Amino acid sequence: MAAHMGHRLRRGATTSVVMAAAVAALAASQAPEMVQPPVDNAGGDHAVGAGDTTPASGDGSATGNSPYYTELPALNSPNKPGATANLPVIAGPAEAGIPASVYSAYKRAELSIRSTDPGCNLPWQLLAGIGKVESGQAGGGAVDANGTASPPIIGPALNGVGFAKITDTDGGAYDGDKVHDRAVGPMQFIPSTWATWGQDANSDGKKDPNNIYDAAQAAGLYLCANDRNLALKADLDQAILSYNHSQEYLNTVLSWVAFYERGTHQVPDGTGVLPVHRSDNGNRNTGSHPTTPPPAVPTVPAPKPGNPTPKPSETHPGTVKPPTVPTKPPVTPPVTPPALPAAAKVSRLAIVANEKLTTTTGSAFTGAPRVAALDAAGKPVAGVSIRFEIVGTTDTRFAAGGTTATVTTGSTGLATSPALRAGEKTGSFTVRATVVRRTLAPADFAATVTERQADTLTRVAGDPLSATTGSPFAQQLQVKATDKGALAPGVLVTAVIVSSKTDSKESTEGPTFKSADGTPVRTVTLKTGTNGLLTFASGDLLAGDKAGTFYLQLTAPGGGTTFVDLTVTAAATPEPTPDPEPTPAPTPSGSGTPEATPSAGASPSA
Image 1 (cartoon, rainbow, N blue to C red):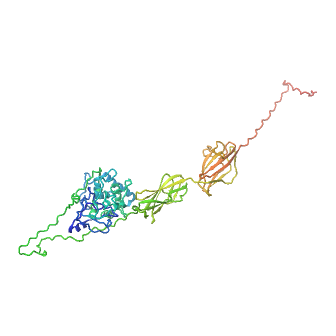
Image 2 (spheres, helix red, strand yellow; image 1 turned 120 degrees about the vertical axis):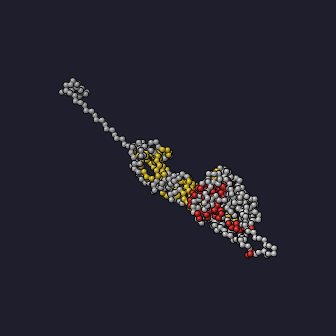
Image 3 (spheres, rainbow, N blue to C red; image 1 turned 180 degrees about the horizontal axis):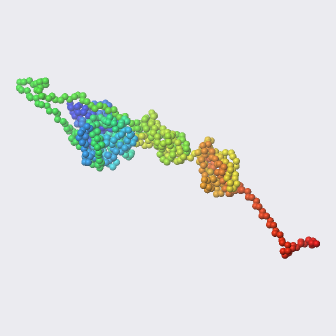
């Protein structure tokens, strides 16, 4: 409890004066109710005796109308605000040393809350000041390797005897008491308050008020409630008073905050210096109460025999009358309890629609992830910030082009992510929804992007494709892709030159596609345009050097396929030019060459 476990109450006429000096809050529903642990603490006062009484409920405090009145501050302040004395040096082994795990928990809580609520400006020294006053930094750092107090820090029963009466709210789950509640842990939360503000800051799957990491995170969130800016003195004071509604408590915590702001050092767990000079002078749970001697009253001379006893008005001059105890002492002004943040009310996120999302490349998803923020009773929680995040290797984006988007739940507790549009990458990824400022199980949506499909490929009317060997195909070829009767733009179509319609194996001869580097290729992948058309311009196909009939096989995701005949004829071979007959050379006269012999039957010359 934000008030200290051992704070005492006095009996009799002085009770109202003393109790009015410092009013503390026992936050039964909103505030962390701090009660002194039975081992040792920074508060140090002991429980009241059986004859003490608890004043009636107060109004306006963070107590759930279960006030717990304290007497003096839990510690003699090291440097009360406004004091002129120097702060203690930090080199020694005294109060400046904070056990390592406790220091780590305060720093982690500061960093975590500053990342989710930067406007709060939570300083870790504030957590340290409260932790010092409430439990002496977890009993001098008596925590295990996970940061859990060992033994657990459990306060006295809140049974109405010297404390507020709070009937058990947790079945003894946290405090071991099934009759009354008890404050628990280093930051002293009562179970009903922990049920609202508890955190799992060390990610061990449990919200444990005895774990310094969990407790520090919860205390930080509580102090930041109501959109406080702790850099402002007014908000800082309100935060501390909401934790324990006592002016003395405020002064003491502020003095420790100033002390830690001066400087500190870490000490090993379990070796922290426990508080000294406690307001109970070291008496703990003994039933004894250190008291302040009453003011001296001069002795009035006894009346002489025969003289009447003087009346009060006839008291000798100089006689001091006993001090009058006021019946209505001043009290600390009430503090408005912090409103519970909407996020703190959420128990789980439920998937409402579009758990599995699918689309094709370059297309918008037809649905968007939708979740409901629900409390422990299954009721919707409005005003909760839900963060949607695209997780995985994908170029899918939200409508604004980012991979994250934050949406606030409406009155029905629903939040729907912005529209999603796929890029050109295929594959699976996750859209994750989480509650901002809470550590709850996320709601994950499976998303898949596949290639665009066409169930039909049809050749647009045109001339037959034919060419002679060694020449390009001069005709233009167009193919239309449709899917379920609609034009299918952006579809990747595979084009392969084959030698048979029954064998899809790439041909080793015949036509080829024109490539940029001049290398003949017989398989290419092309994309249909915005009109769903695939176009081969004149010259995109080369006939090759083999005559015959070949086929252009076109296939698309979704089952669309078609064949286009490619006829290659051999180029005409020109007839060879005959060689001219040689002209005989003339024979010279008298050359001695024998004359030709006349043919048989020829008449001899005359």
